[in-house]
Structure formats: C-alpha cells, structure tokens
Amino acid sequence: MADSKGNYSDSSSNYINKTVPNSEEAKHNFNVSKKKEEKYNAEWSKNKVNINEVVDKFAPNSEGHVEGYKYVFEGERYQIIADMVAGSLRIKDKKTNQHVKLDGKPGSRSETHFKIKKRGEM
Image (cartoon, rainbow, N blue to C red; front, side):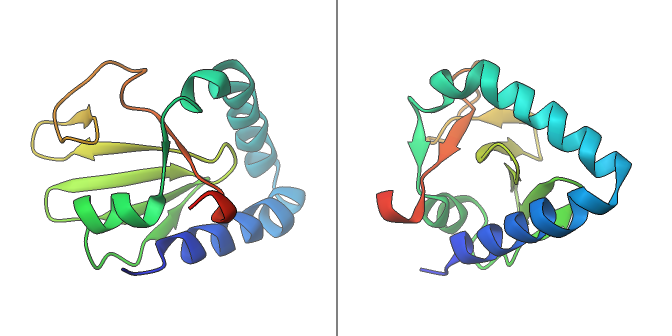
C-alpha cells in the first residue's frame, strides 16, 4: 500500500504554512474551506476514511498533485479530490461525472463526503 497520506499531508502543510500567508487568493480559499468545515465537519466525521485505502481502491499507483487547495489523485476511472484545508475528500466517477460512495455507486452529498483519518487513527 502506497503512503498517499504522506504525500497529501506534506502538501497540505506546505499549502497552509507557505502558500496561504503569501497569497490573497489562497487566504480566500482557506477561509472558504474552513467555513465549510465548520458547517459540515460533524456530518463528514461520521464517514471517516483511510486515504491510503481509498486511493489504493479507486486510483491505484496515483502519486497525486496539487490543484489550488485540493490534492487530487487521478485514476483510470475515478478521481479522489482531497481538501488540504478541511481534511475531507470526495471520490468522483469521471465516466458519469458523479460523486460516489465507497462502493463506487452514486450517493447523496452526505454519503459522498468523507473525513480523512489522522495518521494515528489509521
């Protein structure tokens, strides 16, 4: 199993500690993401996931890359989009353009948002 958590965490730390203080756009995105986290964190926390397992299942061998305040893992069919500020992720089926649950089937907004487990919870 690849350590996708390490890549994501390093990029998150770099974004929050280096990019945000030096960019008005990044500060704005940071604040927007934090507000979403405040609003939905209790709901997201009901669905905690190990990012390594999610990436191995939906985008195996993906290294991931930064897109703004998101960290994206690209698979053949699926894309895992992780918020580097809020610590949440969604899985997008590129073929249907829908967000999916852990079984790969489309679901409601609350069913397709997941809180990323901290290293100690994995």
